[in-house]
Image: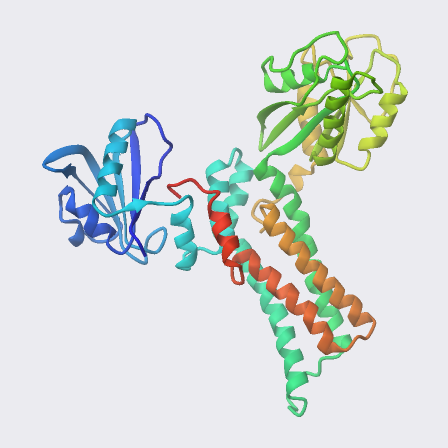
Length: 444
């Protein structure tokens, strides 16, 4: 492996910067410019004090952590240079490393090496950036769960069960004369396939909440023009990000905001008012709003309590009925013109109902039912592979009920086995691995 280095801490001023160095000769190379203890004689998992010196010039006073293969982050020899956190001094130390034999690491290359050196499975690698980016306790717990390989262990157990079925089928096909082998019949296969399908269905159900907790809940605020959507956005954000006006159609595009709400985070989208309209520019915003509704994890549909419900309101209620949504009856500080049992009344202008709205979001998304310690699929790639595996097993089960020859059922069962392997990286195309790790920062 080549010797690589990169800055592992956020770029900018700070108390400390860390430059990570890895490779077969990493310790020897850093030792060339380190004045202090001989790093080649320092035991692993130790930190020592000294200076980085190049061409007889002291570059910085540092602490160097030494890690020896295989007991390091990526399984290789590593040094982490803790230098002062100024931009200039950090870059100067990095320049020295590049001059003495290191090359700049590619994005995610340290974690990629950890995967290739069997220090992490693929789900653990993906969870590294989830841990770094976690914005709530639940998001952190769920990410750490994957980082600790709990998800990978669960996937491996599923694959072991499938592999056992495949082995029994193979023995029946290739060695029918073997008396001690279990005879694999359709009646034998069906309960095993049903059990696997139920387990994977439960994992996917738990994963739906996990993904939005980690990635943030894409929340669309929709409604007719001038019902208070932008005021609600500003109320939740605690700032005047959206323009508030009595003129209908003021919001022509999607206005975005981000807040942390207890154990979750919301990616708020204030959309253009939806109505029948001949204004060309406004119609573009309305079409964008309708697309946002399709993509949203949660919809806050705002209705004006001080005006009679119109066809546009009723059409919107019908539009969102099959998606997680909350009906907000805004302007409860004014005389109400209508009443419904399925709405939450608020006054965005006067900040009335904000606590009730937060509680309702938890209720609708079933956040309190989510157990972050249960293994879950935390991204779209993992979810898609699990769904594909489930489809293959369901196809095998349907064919089993139709009494299709068992040798043909093996094709779908093997497909399910391979798809699960891709989740944890035990069967994967090389280009997938390269693409995945380019999403990481350089120091990871």
